[in-house]
Image 1: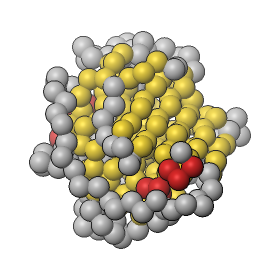
Image 2: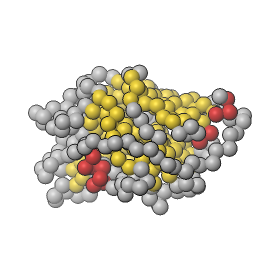
Image 3: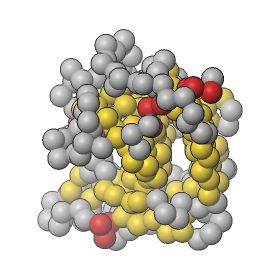
Image 4: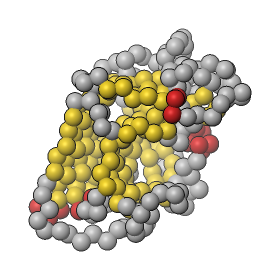
Length: 273
């Protein structure tokens, strides 16, 4: 989705109805003999960090680059940071684990990760504040439909908006020029406690499951178009994300930081069901 439309959803977060999606699916040839797989880690060492699309650049500010995000691995956990230079910008850090694998659609994927805020967002301001914490699972079908199949959540943490604490889900919609929209999913009280996210992606049945602390939240299966620059590979991604707070038209903006730990990714082949 383009930066403007995503920023509008993050700032305004108006209500949206979830519609049914008519999507083409990659052809799935069930491959008997595929072995289950399991990956896990204490922190996010080996994950990649990139700039996402939830961006805004204030007057007089240089364009956002890799110096505005950082993911620090400490062993027990990883700190995912955005707007680390405290500039008048809104910055999006996507830290993700990826496997390029032609068999990725032949598995049910179950991902878990723990996350927390090391501070509580506040209208009192200060050097740290928050816009969102996010996460998701996707498989890019670069060789066939050229859609990014998956789903995502967004925890709204801007303390100035009425939706503070709301959880939203990404609804892919190819008819929308931005690729989709955010819709209500539930509520999670903002705090500094550890929470566990669980995502289940069943592509063959076009089904998803999203749980936070074992509580089910609404989620939506779908396929999002991506730019022509994306490759022709089949690639599965598990993502941990944050967006720093919109700074208004100030030359200075708060940093945002969230902690992630104890992730796992289970691949269950359909042929073993």
